[in-house]
Image (cartoon, rainbow, N blue to C red; front, side):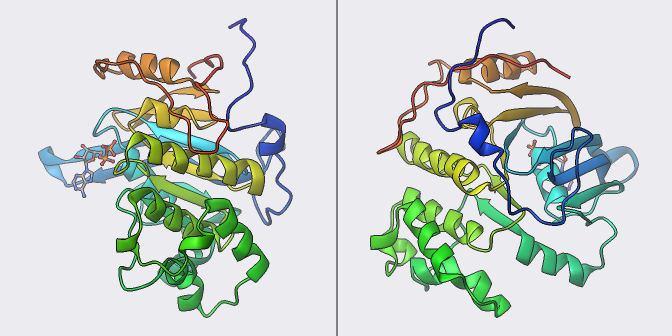
Length: 300
Ligand code: ADP
């Protein structure tokens, strides 16, 4: 401790807490609004001697308007946690809330509706429909739900993701980075309580990855969006405001204002090998992103 963190390239920390439009959400003990909460979640796969405990009593709180990265060695439970938080998988025990609603006790139909209306997803493989244009992909969830679209909001999302001149293109006519930006626009357009991103830069080169991460940051800083991102990449994690580390299905640490080096040190402590070249954060086109600066927080 002792070092004063320099300004984050993505966050003016004041603005990222400017969350005025979040409705019906739980509050933390400190009084901030929660977009999601996990309490004592246990998830096992299989039975008998072959059983695997993927999550072993995980509890975390995700403040509204925050950008959280989840990291840990392969097999530590990151994807399982994301799936349980997003209502894609059911824990064996423990409770999960999205916004103010407990999803662990929710009937399937209500859960499907909640996932559709209140949760956004961004996947490593983009998951766009190839026959639809970028515009068609962005509005597809609202079209399926028969939901009217706020055209001003749609325009501002399209503007933010920088796709205004690509809306009529099909995914095959777009670069990987552009396709992922379509997927982010699709996730943001319904103003979800939370966006879950699973290795969103895993299929991108470092420049396109930087643009996608910059965009996720801006969705938090400018729109008050809540983002939870699973990644194995210390540079990607350094775009977030805090990193939650998992090992063997348990939360083993939290790092506030992460830098690539600080994340890497924690990962090494969890047994990950050090890469041949040190992690560097590339600048996204037209962004002010610079090498990360900050201090490490304390492990819980
Ligand atoms: P991570 O995303 O950190 O790599 P996962 O959440 O995918 O970890 O997996 C955590 C543990 O649970 C691993 O040991 C994995 O093999 C196991 N696991 C995950 N999904 C399944 C499944 N569907 N069936 C059996 N075991 C699983």
